[in-house]
Image 1 (cartoon, rainbow over the protein chains, first blue to last red):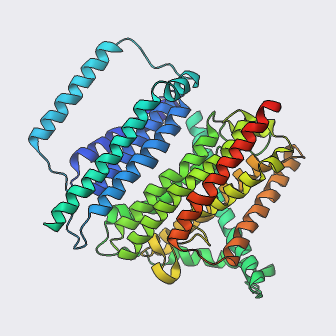
Image 2 (image 1 turned 45 degrees about the vertical axis):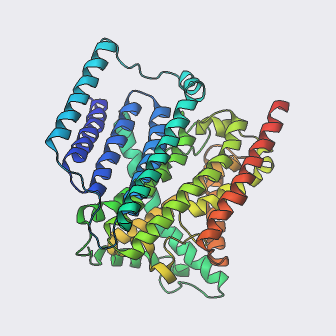
Image 3 (image 1 turned 90 degrees about the horizontal axis):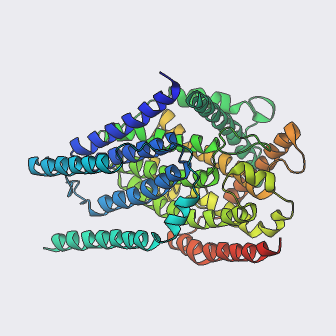
Length: 163
Length: 315
């Protein structure tokens, strides 16, 4: 087993461990830690395939942006008496839906990219053109939607507090 | 093979930071004493230079206190998450032309992205302590670090524009002496924003000892506390090294081993300036800090970028 395989295994273990943490823990803050581990694992996977830009962007945008936003949201809606407002529930229905969706995604991806293996060391130029070209509107819209969702959560929780 | 080298460079950069922190603390004590017309440490070793050798065992043997109400697993891990990214960021910095521990095509972006992981770690440590002062400190640190990332990246972007590459080695080899005056405003912005990124005085609002005790690491003791301090010194060393490379051409005008020595001298000068600023200026208020970032530094960084952009077609 070469050392590169060890690196791959480390990234994969980080991803699987993080995903299991997200699925199994009830404390929302630990859930975020699991998500962070998963995202760093994905970044490691990108690095393994030689996409350094993608890995860095992953850390910058998801770990540094989205994750911080989530922790902020959790901190802001946390009550002063220490009782957590947000608690992940272990719901069989939700688990079934999650498993179904991931199964469906897996099948679709296997159908569409079946024999194709990621090439390592592809130049970053086309990615840059794609990101700053026609995809930029979609990305900005997604950012706007996230902001709206956060404000909505604050409004909903605030209304609950007043009642 | 890459993994083994990565591991070795990781160990090397942790050793650099630990050694740098030991020397840095002594140097800071001397600089601060000089500014306040005192002597500073002078009993142990020549000019008190062995003082830290007495202090490190003290930190190692201190009791490791974990508060009863803390989220123990997260509380214990958070210092590592704070320290890890700083040590990682060191490896992309080129020390001489054609020589960087890890040659990364987007190394500059990588270096600038590292504080985002630190933000998470600081928020986690603040949260895990279950302590009001820590939580306030963590929130302040996050607001400050996220905001100052923007002028910091914009300032570095002007050099990236000139070099036409995000690879630190390319920037170093393309560097010309007249870039330093052209991007001097950028360097000043980078310098100020970096001090804010490392939560050092005068921007130590998240850990303000007179109001928040020590902010997000108020409940830590012994080596875990020392990890936070080492992370602070580590980011000071890394930011000064990176600034010396990007804005002052690394070892320019020398090359080879002499260039590395000159780079270290430039780095120490920048670090001394960071300490000088800390011991000279009073701490601003939170709102002053934010409006300074968004109303002064960010527009200035954009202006610097415009100037570089205007010069660029004539080169």
